[in-house]
Image 1 (cartoon, rainbow, N blue to C red):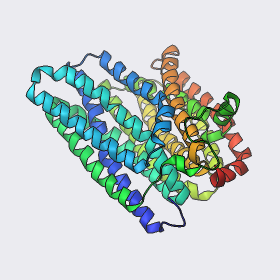
Image 2 (cartoon, rainbow, N blue to C red; image 1 turned 60 degrees about the horizontal axis):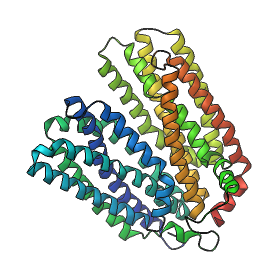
Image 3 (cartoon, rainbow, N blue to C red; image 1 turned 90 degrees about the vertical axis):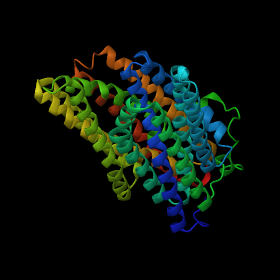
Image 4 (cartoon, rainbow, N blue to C red; image 1 turned 120 degrees about the horizontal axis):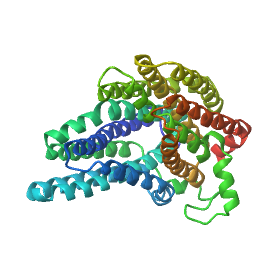
Length: 426
């Protein structure tokens, strides 16, 4: 992509087709995730399967740097097309085997679900490569692309597709597999149209003169410096925000739901839906805020605003009880969804605008790995502090992690000139 060679209308057209492909592809993926939970509820799979599948997904995310190194050799649009096509083929194979040999239902589902967690991990990395090329061609298009992705993931994934997948698992496994097969095939076609509209180059071709391609050994000290001194874009920032968000996530929602007079499952469902509503709106507010000035300063202000909100809610949780605690939980989930997704969109776009080639792939992929690590650490930390019984403690810890992230973000301001240079050189 090149801003000098691609008309703005053509670029927007390609972005819309790619986003449409993402919509239907994510819909199929989330249907399968919800269906997996439904199969556990039906007793077809053991409860421990939830932990097994989650662990498998996190392990794959840890491999993001390896995936970035490999897929940087190919066109991002081409990889996304191939991923959706392969997911459709795998779904078709599973569908046929179960149809022909119903006795193999459980082992086939286990293998199928384990394979299925690979595709989202691949698309997460490669969508970033695609967004980075958009950012180099037109920063506004990249912001719109990222806002669309985060908003769609929240609404389709949390509010709609996962509950529907659970229902379809109870209706028919064949329907569930056929739905993902059809949606993945549709995503393939939509992404293909986008790839024909605007050609995306392999990321390694961006910096052939300035940097070695992916995979070449790099001295440890400069490698670590690059990962921790890039402020908002750094993997350390991703680790801090992911750890805090996990401590103050589902465990706090469970605490609020337990305080309701409603059945816990209903109360939890409403709390998660509140988060989904906030997470759907937040990305578009972030897009509007991006026009006000430097993105790094906007992220810093947003972090401090979130810290103040968390401290206030920590006090509210500590002093409230009964039904009031549940309503506080609803407010908490709504605004955390709103604030967290705003920050995520701004951070992602800043990273895409600021770096190119191998440096972008290195920082982006290790940020994904750091997020996975932070999610794991946050889960165990929430258990240690008994977050379901003491949500005020979990929310306070969340605030502390964001304070650390805000202090780290100050480095971004100091490196503003370097970022500008990075956009031209690296």
